[in-house]
Length: 242
Length: 242
Image (cartoon, rainbow over all chains, first blue to last red; front, top):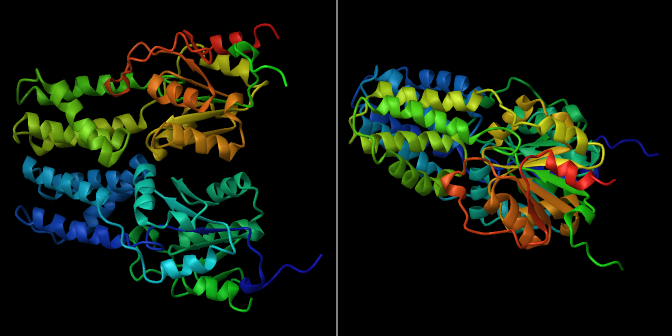
């Protein structure tokens, strides 16, 4: 039996999982844009200095009840608006917030640079699926509207990206962890749990990190993980010398 | 090759799918209870004679944007409240509506009569999964809290129960339609699409039907479908003479 490969370029992958939000398409920017419009709605009522902190606190609390996704986020926006305006927000303002949520649910999908080039290079050599966290209905809709479906063998929407979830998914696909590569922008969601399973990870940081996805971990000394700038560097790394 | 079985008791099943809401556990009752409390909140503001129609109209419109589930339903409750009170509802009332949604998300799971007995009888002879529609996070939470997980080989949460969804699921499980039985309370979601695929269906009507799941179809003359009173009649039918 040969030694296990120490280098990602020498590993052999039966399945590549790629994250959706902020790895294939822009996402956090939509939240930031929504929050700008939200501030405009609320600015008629009160000072917004602590708005970000109150919203984050509400989101954290509600995440346990509602899970990830735009619908729970919209409910958190409404609760925060009630709290921060001391109950003075009018029904009209609440409706405007719901309309912001609807805009997010049905907005256009803005694919990141070089994603199509990367997928065109990877597609002939690998089985590839999207593994994305959040709201089933919304993630399916985004995937369908992305124009990327023909590059993938499937879409897996999960409610949480933890070791158990990845483990169950790999055993359903009958893939050994050492033959699985996960690519994504979030260390705690896309990289750390798959490394714990014995799989490989490519971290492609997005220029903004969601507060809820911050991590102090450093993967620079882990041999089964690598940090790259752009999705197109994945085929360059894996297929570079083939 | 033997003739295809004409009778469900003679068919051989490699997989049984069972619906969750109102098949394994009570669900629509929670919506009805929520709507009673909702009426109490709104009754301070206006006449509620047309409330049901306006809510249903809002739900239908929002279903295309938000999909099925409690979070979208809660947003529809808020929109309906704004409309029906002509914008007079106060922030306090909106917060009470959000709290109703939170109650629904985290409420206890009320298992239907004879479900456990039925699953105990079926479990030794069949591979069984729950196939349920709606919000991924909420359905996973309900399944986990139901105390029924050990009876099942898995949970599949789907955004829509149509022919395409069931077809994709069966091919992922490598099950031929003629060896698949779906059990559920909804004709349009649980029975009609699987019959169209060539699979078998057991319809177990719940005493209340959600407006969105009404169907005028009659399955009494379809040989691959049968209507039973209770889930425990399924093992009685399948295992009765074995």
